[in-house]
Structure formats: structure tokens, C-alpha cells
Length: 454
Image 1 (cartoon, rainbow, N blue to C red):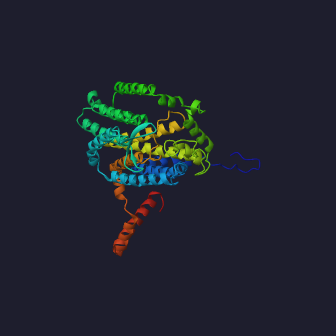
Image 2 (tube, rainbow, N blue to C red):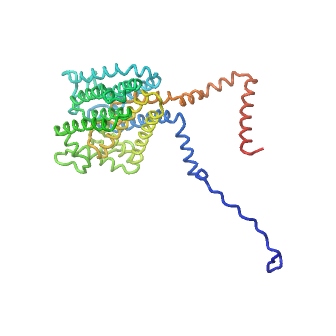
Image 3 (tube, rainbow, N blue to C red):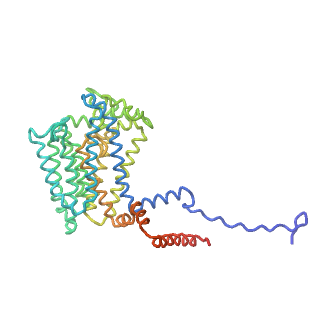
């Protein structure tokens, strides 16, 4: 046996154990990703995202409407909270509509499709009657209700197209008729073009673009072939090109994309000052209520360009928060449409998601100078009761569809109010409370044994 220099036998060292490969779940980042995926896959994730996201957008919109509209109200010799009070009233009514829509069964939603479409067509035709229709900013698409209250029927036309188109496509799918291109186009496309014609009679091309996006969203969900999709898109683009080319106002808006100077005759004044507002906000903004552009420099500060005032007062952090809320709402709507087995729910949820997402993209893109100014409000955020009421009803549809999912229904049924459990525990006898406590302890004991403890 070999010895060391001191004559003592060498110390036998134990062989090192091979290092175990660490899985991605062992580090904090991996655990966070795993927990996020589990939370994302829970049955009630879409329900909470739709409910929480829409309410947060609405509340933040009320705050920004109050901040952005004060100067405009004072310039019109009105109280500073004039526009905020009207928007708050519309939000309360819209909240009631959202609650009613979220509690209505799917059959009742389908039953409302045809009456809602007929009512929207009637009101949109009534706009063109002299003495009834009201012209605002060059577009005649309003009906006066007396006093300072007005209604824009084209906003309700979006909701009508979603419900009626979803019901129509669902019935044709049940009869297996969507494999034929004639049944896919007729009567959906002619009815949509009728609504578009009534809107364009008033000159509101922004709302027409949103309706076109809803139509293409429904066709895409119905599985329209590429050639059919391209054909309808080509017709819509050709009509849009003619309408833009024949209107100097629309051509000037198209020329203001990416503008950094107001240009001759201040043609791009609104677009440029929207960029100024965003640029002066920085990362955290100048503070709530401290906007400079709303002092008469930026037109429509509380309606179409409220996102610019948000960027000026709340900075990049505020605008990114708003965009994150819209992204969460859009993700939840896509998830509801993708996980359902009911064709009507799939088409209606996809139509509503397309509507809200496309309108938000068009509004934000115009404020950022990436798209022409279309004159559409930011959903749930901008001032305007006519836009807020149908949008909140549509959000109620998404909530109802998210609750109607079988897994979500089961999860909601398992959750009881806390006060109900406390009252049951108080009324229960000691004998009834004993087994419940014993079952809890038994579950804990079985969990401890499964982890290797004795």
C-alpha cells in the first residue's frame, strides 16, 4: 500500500457524485414562467381579463376625459365638468347594459339580431332626412334627441352587424352551407354594403372602415377561401380609393401621414400637435391635468386625440398601460372565440374582438402619425356616449361567452361567497363542524406523506 511522505496511508476521498442537470423549473425565471402559463390556462382567465380590462379602460378614460375636456368646456362657456358628467352618465348606463348582456342567454342574443339590424338601418336612414339628421364636422351622421344629447346610429350598426352576421353564419354552418361561396357571401356581404352605403352618405369614412374590418373578420372566421377573401378585399379597396380620390379633405388627411410640420394653410395641424403632445410627455408625463396642448392647440383633445393627451400627462408609462389593457382584452376575446364549440359564440366573439381591436389600432395609429386621421374614437376611452353604449354591450357579450364555457361554469359554481360559508359555519352544530375540520386535517396529512415526511 503506497504511503505518503510522513509514512501515513493516504486519505481515501469519496468519489464525487455527478452534478444533476438543473431543469428550467429550478431557477426563479423558470418557476415564474411556469406559474404564468398555469395562470394563463385557468378556465376563468379570459373572464377576468375581459371584465377587469374593460372596467380599467373605462375608468381611466373617465379620468382622462375630465382632464382633457375642461379647457374645451370653459371655452364654450360651459362648466369645466360638463363633458365629464355626460360621459359618466353614459358609463353608468353602459355598465347596466354590460351587466344585462353578460347575464342574457345565448338564445336571447340571437333573437335580438334581426330587430337590432332593422332598428340600426332605420335610424341610419333617418339621419339623411332633412330636419332630423345633424351635421357635425362635415359629417351628417347624428340625430338630435333634444337639448345637448345626440345619437350616432352608425355606432349601433357595428353591434347589429356583429350579432346578425354571427347568427346568419351559425345557422348556415349548422346546415353545412358554408362550403359554397354563394351562401358565404349572400346575404352577408350585400347587407354589410348596404350599411356601408348609408354611412358613406353621411361622409363618415372612419366608421365605414371599422364596419369593413368586422365584415372581413366574420368572413375569416367562417373559413372563406383566399380567392374569395381577396376578391371582396379588392372591391372594398377600389371603392375606398375612389372615395378618397374624389374628396380633397380625405386626400389631405392621407398626405399628413408622418408629417412633422403643419404645412401650408395648417393642413396637418391636428396630426402634428398630436405628435407634439406625445413627445413632450416623456417617460412619466407632465402630470395629470398639466397638459399644454389641450389649451386650444390640439383639436378634439377629449375625443379622437385623447390618447395624445394621455401621453402628454401620463407619459410613455401611461400610454403603454392603455395599450397593454387593449392587448389583454383582445387576447381574451380571441381565446373565447377559439375555445368554444358554439358557432354563434365563435363568430360573435371574433366579430366583437375585431371591432374593438381594429378601432383601437386605427385611432392610436392616427395619433402616432402612422395612419390617416379617420375620426374614430378610442373604444371605451374617448368621450362619446353613442360609441360607449354599444361597445360596453359588446363587452357584456364577451363576458357572457366567457362565463358560458363549461370549465368556467364549473369553476364559478365551486366558488361561494365568503359570508355564505361563515353563516353556514355559525348555524352548523359542533358535530357538523367536526368532520369538516377533520377532512381538512386529513388532506394536510396526506399531503405531508406524499412529500416524504413522517
